[in-house]
Amino acid sequence: MSISAADVKQLREMTGVGMMDCKKALAETNGDIEAAVDWLRTKGLAKAAKKADRVAAEGLVGIATDGNRAAIVEINSETDFVARNEQFQSIVRNAAKLALDVNGDVAALAEAEYPDSGRTLSGELTEAIAKIGENMTLRRAAMLEVGEGVIGSYVHSAIADGLGRIGVLVGLESAGDKAKLEALGKQVAMHIAATKPLSLSADDLDPEAVERERAVFSEQAKASGKPDNIVEKMVEGRIRKYYEEVTLLAQTFVIDGENSVEKAVKNAESDVGAPIKVTGFVLYSLGEGVEKQESDFAAEVAAAAGTA
Image (tube, rainbow, N blue to C red):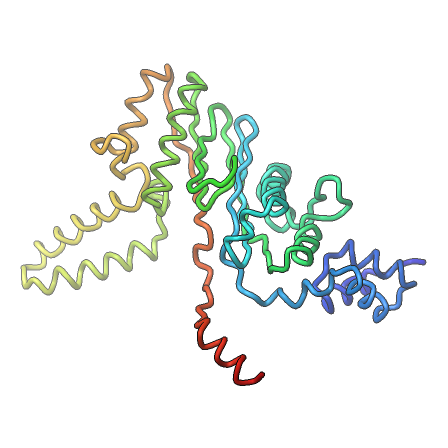
């Protein structure tokens, strides 16, 4: 029989199960939505919806590279224990590869066809939730590409190849020696993981963030009681220092501890054999910005005992 998109949507909203599984459930039950819910429950899929409101701030960041392109994804779980599950690792690894095909578009990635399953990535996650027993979410994805050169990458706290808690991509555009570019790219990526810059350069910083810093510096300088012209110079000096702290190219390169990243890259050009341009970077720190739930385990046990 023909299954309407509206019925699939309704079943998905009722159960939290992926579209392909909802469509299959309706087909198996001749379009009876209530029966389809029961069918999904018997398959262990509908219970995944009950876990959807639980905070997922652990998990893995995954990276996949393909020539002068690379993609990065973050898929979250509730506990770091799941990050060591082979099924979960496989999902993150495949998601990173799929992200290359959709140019890092997270919405398209969620609906991308998962390898050898007949499901979307979203559907595969739903299947994994039911099997592993934890909420999991595809949080974000991005892709970086250069016309000629390399995408340097680095994974910190790696638990498998290309999988870890912090992931970095950085674009180096150059016609120079690829192997030497890759080595430099990894060093710059490691620097980014350590210093967590906000932007590539001062030009890329959020103007509102800069103005907030300027306002704070201005109030601090005025409190010194110095003349306005001196206050203005103090503020500009602190803004320059702020740029050096938060913009990649102006930061002191952690590898040599002396030169700025911009200068270090410039110095590498003679070894690489061609000019080098840092085109951009992506930094994902696992769970960054996710509000984690705090729980008092002893209190929960006591409360459970009191209701037993």
